[in-house]
Image (cartoon, rainbow, N blue to C red):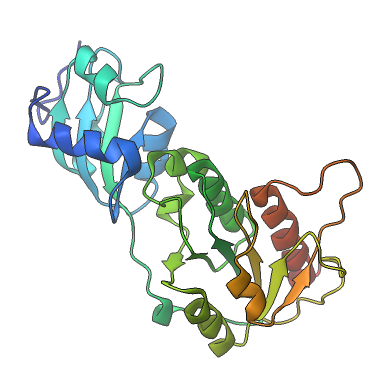
Length: 264
């Protein structure tokens, strides 16, 4: 067993362990729990600050030099403590506390190629993570959150987003009128994703700054978004199901708009 020289051994009563256990449940503002081998490989490709690294030599990689060099604090934990701290059923010996970047609405500059996804009232961390990953894949400028229920800091968001929660700009508004006003101020053409809409997503040209608003898994879009007077688009349902998963719907809409903008 290799023991890294910078890794300080700690037990279950250490304050950092209690801190991590609190993060494990639902995260906290600006901080997220990262667990696993590929998750840390991805973490190293970002500029995110690693507040603390927890390493179990019995279960983790023998060489943590790169991670230890990035982490502010490095701790060595036992296999027993790892099993208590980990969320995975088969822990891989690496857990970190990382800081999420901060994005301010006033810092953005948009063009006719700009694409924004708005997630309204999304309930599940896994879906939120997949929406972040989808926005990244379509080269969207940012993800906007309204009526937020799932936290971007939930550990499941990191895995579902494939780590892109650390690089995808995310901004949150306290109310829907404020988000709508921000989009209008940047000349966005806003399209509400609504299965009941008569016009399909193939109709608009998407030739200016474009935003799509998708709703929660259970109840769809908040009434307040409809009250803003934006157009609605639908994805035709050709089988027995009456709707698609929110992340799948977002992917169809974002890539349709991206294809139009890029002339694919």
